[in-house]
Length: 270
Image (cartoon, rainbow, N blue to C red; front, side, top):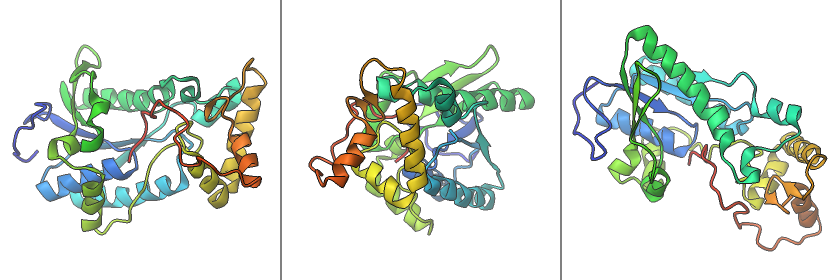
């Protein structure tokens, strides 16, 4: 890895392997573009596929696979849990955990598959320390508050955490500009297409652009209602996406842009 200034967080260290947690959205793409501009060479770029990403995210991952190969002769690694989030919801008749006020879906379908791969990758190479880059921008530095600066993944491997965009002071606008400087199409937000953190306007847009995906989302929501005593939908308690669609069809469009869920999705990338 090329010599660079030591960041304030102290997590990026010389001679420590550098892994980028790539989410397929604006922020993590901006990290890669920033590395390109600064001459920083990652050792691993890894994307965890939940099995329910937005179609534009899958297209963007393919674009960034080519860029990662072109810039650093690296393969952008794609990992997945044994069971996709859709398979899990279908099997259990449950919604993603965020609908119930929890965040275990990001842990199960994003973090755990990445950690499993990183452990095997490090063991194969005799690596004992790794720095993971996470794509929180400077406007959402609060998302790292209270989180550890390092973690023992096992007896052999320590993982440090670095937030480059916060370190560089890049807000969303700077991230978008950095991606544009590399002539890469803007990826937009990356999240599961039936994420409970979706805005109502995003649900309507999903139905307009990808009606089959909205239909699958509503099917998952309807199946979950059969086992709940109270009304819990993809928008949280008393917030069914099916009701939102009916309200829109009745042209009751007030407050469409209000975020229905107060807990931000931990998978969110830009």
